[in-house]
Image (cartoon, rainbow, N blue to C red; front, side, top):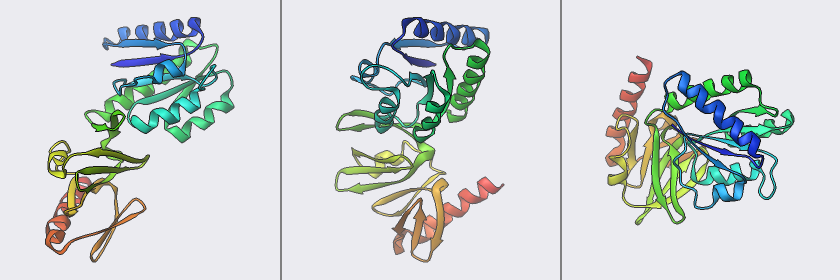
Length: 235
């Protein structure tokens, strides 16, 4: 497991690092921590490799909330935990899918409670991430948060719960990287996440807030894939 700790106070960075290492050592979990003294150095040349990020909200330069919003543009899968002096600031964390917060001065018991949540999320995520190339480098997406993937010539647009991410390639290649039981094409342009299907109405399927056309050539197979998926989930 890889964890990033971003805080302008060295004493806090070291304390959290020690708590993380002690927590993981007691549970025989391998862990590597990387520390950053400000959000700008953390975000510079960011690569989506961390399982979790502990992020101070109040820092010089870009504050933690601004950094979290920037981070979510390229990494929707990493687990976010905020570090803060005031609890009311942490409420904003839910807008960037933070799982919780720790309050300074950091209490060991409270920290371990948050770490238990981090470990549960890591384990529940499993191999549930997809890394894609973008114009700015790499982006990491939670597979379950993908609504559908659209191809426009050689450009791929990943429509996700958190917004759109543009990449390039083909649906054929991308399809091979995804769990086949969860994705199906409703036409030549769209690869749909069956987990996100809301309704099917004649020749269209609603995914999130999007209504997509089901082609005549793909309708039978798409409906069979959807029925198979729903049967598996229901069973």
